[in-house]
Amino acid sequence: MSAADEILDVVDEHDRVVGRAPRGEVYARGLRHRCVFIQARDADGRVFVHRRTPTKLVFPSLYDMFVGGVVGAGESYASAALREAEEELGVTGLPAPRFLFSFLYDDGAGNSWWSAVHEVRCTLPVSPQVEEVAWHDFLTDEELERRLPAWEWVPDGLAAYRRLREFRSRAQGPGSPA
Image 1 (cartoon, rainbow, N blue to C red):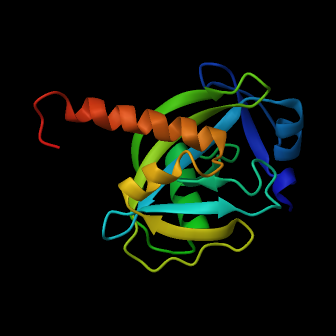
Image 2 (image 1 turned 180 degrees about the vertical axis):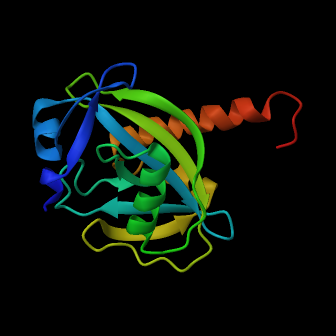
């Protein structure tokens, strides 16, 4: 089965399932569906960053600071997060990614999906899928911030990253140790 044939749940603006359709149809018709974003950090706390392959259905050849993808029909966000993290990093035996928050991504141009943001620590050597990842490295937070204006990033990942920075900033709160 090709990626375009994978069956996805179609959801409404409240993340309730309203139907099912093949991924190719979901993308072609701009149907709202579910995705997971997982920020993977190595043992030193650096963020896994990669450039997508030119053959990706969505956002080919752009950089991303998350691994992840679509949630299959009937699949939970948690299961999808672990599956996608292990697939894209090329590892097995990761701990379950920790859920942080969700939001509705909508670019106003027909791309809309519910996005569940997770984080995971990957202390294993990575071997990313060559079909998914053209280049990868682990970057410090400072290195990642320096590259934000210089590299072309996937727009949904960039939106998730900005929300993640806000989420972490609120979690620390005033007077909290950094």
